[in-house]
Amino acid sequence: MTSLKDKTLFITGGSRGIGRAIALRAAADGANVVIAAKTAEPHPTLPGTIHTVAAEIEEAGGRALPLALDVREEHQVAEAVDSAAHHFGGIDALVNNASAVFLARVEGTPLKRFDLMFDINVRGTLVASQACIPYLKNSGNGHILTLSPPIDLQPNWFTGRTAYTMSKYAMSMTVLGLAEELRADDVAVNALWPKTMIYTAASSVFGLGRAGCRSTDIMADAAHAILTRPTAECSGNFFLDEEVLRQEGATDADLARYELVPGTPPEIDLFVTPS
Image 1 (tube, rainbow, N blue to C red):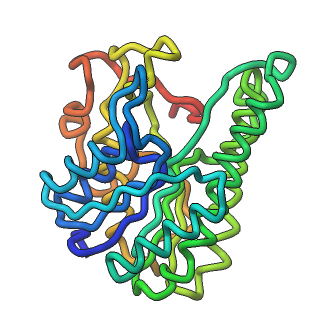
Image 2: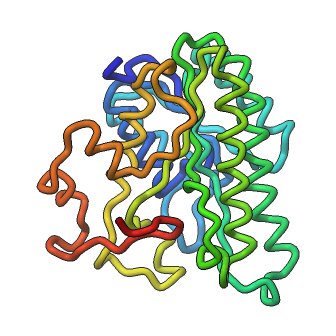
Image 3: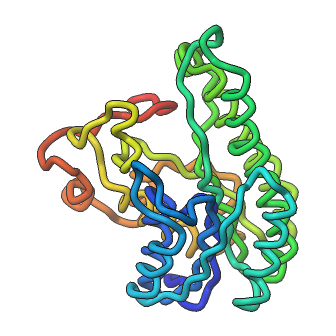
């Protein structure tokens, strides 16, 4: 399978950033895309709502269903998944994109921030996966793709961000477990993480500029490559975006088009050991 035409993707947190990019890449194939996120009304500082992305999906050639939900609320998630499956006749892929970030030492991490990251990153991933699994089993080529890093227990990945690292690695542990649980059901479960820094509208909050960053398109293209692979040949992997595209034949020249400041070497992202 090389196209997502007529396939249905359920994307959490897709009102901006990487989730939006994955949605638009699928839409270019003619996919059905469910944008399930909290932002139904304009954010005071960040662009994008479920409705603006839905309009972009339709313009790109896909079919959109914007659904406002909080992944922390299991009943909202269950209702949204059922509504999406009824609207489009099933679900073929879940993209666990919703995530919260707070980078601080343990002594400077308020418990409400700790709880938020675990409720969205870990519980939200589990809840969305749980709700989608019955439909994915009927897909014939069902996929769960979680945006989480390879698990690397080097202390430097914890220092200054222990709570965040714990939450992202817990998402990755969910990938490990689900990949084995669903292997016999023809449902592939994989993780995807950027090898280098990705610039989004929220990046400025962390003081990240465009230089040294790639666009969200590289994650969208990598996600597309994974979601179009046969489930029997592609499950239980912790992919880096660049490595996926190189497997697809991308060269250094091809990857250069993702650079936001041409000629500026991309900076390696968190949780990635430079090769």
